[in-house]
Length: 423
Ligand code: NAD
Image 1 (cartoon, protein in one colour):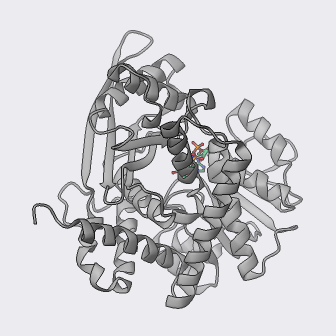
Image 2: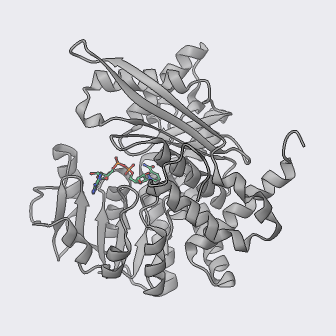
Image 3: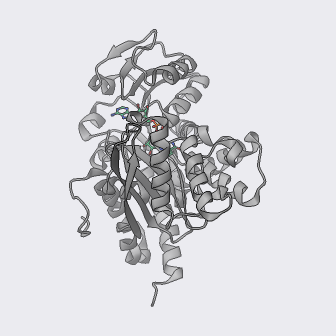
């Protein structure tokens, strides 16, 4: 339990993260002395974001940027626009970024930001004003060497373009490296938009090989059909799997023979949700968890897999595209039932890995081909899952704990070697 006064003890995401840290502590030897550094964010900024709406009225939104840990390099992490965003959620998301960048051995710390807003209710002009004002408010703490935002739920490359332009305008010159996930013609990287879904697929393939699960004709269910879920579903369908159930904020659709995922992507682009897709049966949202499946990909929000749902899941493998979708108690239930869980901190790290490539390319002003990017991404992801798998076998622990062992050792070694200022 945290003793930070501003932590709402009822908020699940931060509590989930703290429980994960408590589980890894016994494996850390002397580095355990430094573990408290991971149980609190280094810096948390709350900002007021007032904007003039299209009808002339003024509305205020609350925004956040949390830098959880900067021991290994600048902060890195997305910006979320969602009505449920709050400080506790952003703290947890920033902490998971600390772990994720360390598992992949990227030279970054962890950060995250967000605005408590439903972006679907804003016009494009209002969204631009919100983004520019939010960027201005957090600009004292961001920068290419300090903290580099990227897209997350509810944000996209266009929004990153506005953030880059706002920051650059304030600095009097173009600073492409201040955000990643930008449009390609603004210094973005080829392959970034699809990188997270690709990483889910690549780590999933490796895990499937290890447990002897054939992808051909396997049944896949996906929760969330946005940036992450749609690409992961597409790549699994291309590899011969059947995507039999998809759930998003508009409902749940089912087809025992598998969907035409390309057609579903086109449908969602036009209709902004999966509900009503042709050749699909609409099923109850709760019935989604009882669908017969081999692979489950949560790719929506955190806190989705409860113990009760974990007991019902027929999947042999869970690929965490979303951040924090599984409660610690549900993790235990899945482990007990022999379900392989590829944890978020490695499974969805494809996005931050190509964000790292984007930042490197911006710094060098030299850009790589998409093939080069995918090749480097696949190599890093495969190496990371191999390392995590080996650690989990050596220590007889879950893949999640193994990933945390590798990450926490790297972060806390950096903390120890840097020393505690002023000593
Ligand atoms: P997105 O906004 O593109 O898509 C989110 C999807 O979740 C949408 O299909 C939406 O309909 C669905 N959704 C929202 N509320 C839901 C609900 N209550 N029930 C079912 N579905 C619901 O977001 P994204 O970028 O795909 O992110 C999804 C998850 O992946 C998040 O947890 C995010 O933090 C994580 N993630 C994203 C990236 C990235 O590069 N975009 C990287 C790492 C992790």
